[in-house]
Length: 238
Image (tube, rainbow, N blue to C red; front, side, top):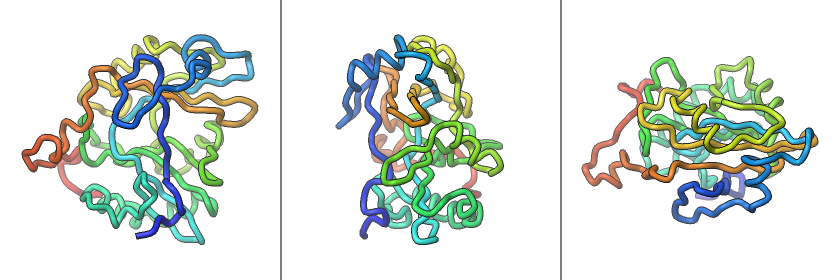
């Protein structure tokens, strides 16, 4: 099946020094790491740090007036071989009016789909299984954080927890101290954090940190080999 957008829904975020690299991952340039975790350039830099959630990267696009659920590769969620993505496609379809009201033509809202446990279990009681972290347009341009928040403020869409916003850099140690407990119901240790650097009303770059002892996909049946899917919802009422 062709990709509705003609490209990936979401790219990869480079890692900060000391972050655990997965297959195909890479570190960020030294200059970006310095701005994010050591010293910003000047007062024009804005540093935003958010909890890194551990789910499946998905998106909701508005294309030619149609609301389309996507997996990270850019394919329609309903074409995925994984059950969790079929639940996501149904979840989006049930909220068509909501996403039609939030999104402008050509935009897509990206986030984490937490219905199935990957390497972290979550208590999603009274929480949404989809948690947004980016609003994109023109292929991979990002809406700035303030606009992202204001656009979603009046909706029922959850936003990835933010633990710091300011003109100063935030060290990895301080970020993980702020995330000693999850702000979104993680039952296992928080996976890490994401730094978003904005300047002159533009998102300049994103970098991330993943705990060195983090093991990917420890609850996935294709990893455990036991054939058991671990759902973060006790019942599939999505």
